[in-house]
Image 1: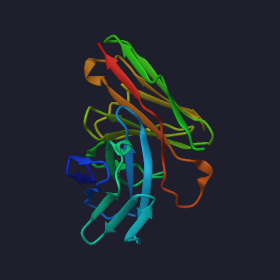
Image 2 (image 1 turned 45 degrees about the vertical axis):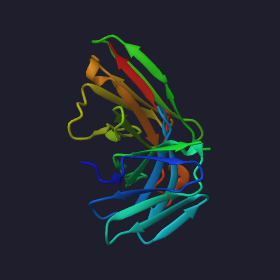
Image 3 (image 1 turned 90 degrees about the vertical axis):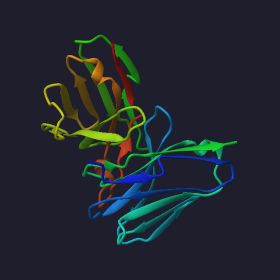
Image 4 (image 1 turned 30 degrees about the vertical axis):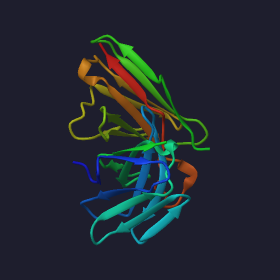
Length: 110
Length: 119
């Protein structure tokens, strides 16, 4: 079963707008990661947030984690057409298996 | 650094034939590699965990005799789809963990994927 589930499944916005994607998970975690996948390509690691962190920033990305609600959000600010991709949250990693959410397709229109 | 390659990037084969997909860590050593498959517009599903020098650990529901995994060195793991059928058509992605990263790092590095089409 999928550990994380993103919502919404697809999001279409205009360039310059912010995009927020949410992810929920079911079991306790040590960390949660976000990945990007361009169409037909492999995954690119975006950011990792540990269970004892509440918020983390990386460039135009901001990730929050609420362990009490078992949820995380990824915010992309000032979106660009190049941000068009599918985004996945995942728990686990390293020598542990990664369990991916369903993914969310973001389209940024120029 | 931390580049993972896959070969081939795409392959078309006839039903009943076998196909081998290679996953290589180009600039680091990986004791553990993971194989995922992804159907169109769906998420990645882990198929198996491959450890160098030992047998792979398969996820529930994945046929080990159909999806043969060999991790013969610290930089190479192969996935062989035996007696392929159209339902095996999918996007196969590998990932690897950097052995020397040390500490509680959770990052895995992903290959670009291999698209398999079985006709």
